Image (cartoon, rainbow, N blue to C red):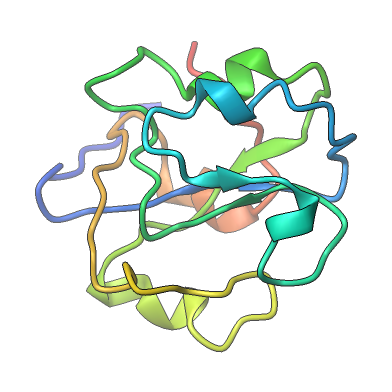
Length: 128
């Protein structure tokens, strides 16, 4: 999937879907502490939550998102749109997200993940 992104301009996050079984496998793996359990999920959903404004896709820490590598549930952790100015409206006013004090932050994204996969909203965070 050749797709080129400028890492300093494109930001994004991963998203935990309703397939989450709340097993805790991902919690300790996140180097930016962007994942919270269902008790602290700001959306009120009974699943774990990734703060898109702090998730770095583990760039600089791991070769692939550590949460997905630890997760035992296929399809639970998926790619999301870049967290940048061009896509901010995707996150703001969307019931899937509650942005906190870090909402102005930008996070790096992986250039090998296509925008089509990110826009699909259900492509598992696997880097081959």
